[in-house]
Amino acid sequence: MDVKAQLKHARTAPRKARLIADMIRGKNVNDAMNILVFTRKKAAGLFQKLLKSALANAEENHKVLDVEDLYVKKVTVDEGVTMKRQLPRARGMTTLIRKRTSHITLVLDEKE
Image 1 (cartoon, rainbow, N blue to C red):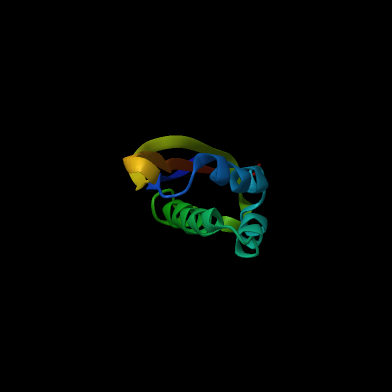
Image 2: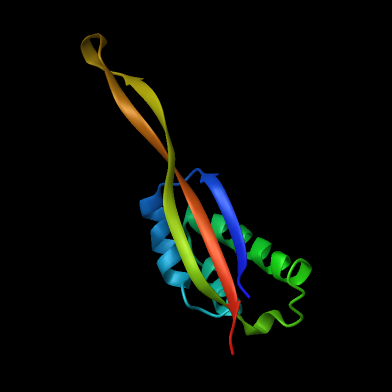
């Protein structure tokens, strides 16, 4: 019984989001939430909302009664679309600025 939650087009670079994903992968849900609350990164807030969404999915859709038995089975951070912007430079030139996005998938499972 896998409980899944996804966040598409998150406005954070995948490289930065993977740092947070590595911290919570394989952890108990309560431990993962504590790690996210005390991590001072922008992506930690996104992961916190995603974890709450996955817990709500577990209670509502999968009828899991005890969320204490859940753990973070799988976290993947894939690259989303890249918004391209331009910054004016000297002598009429421009520099390309890439605003990267991420697709984050979180899977919870019950411990046996």
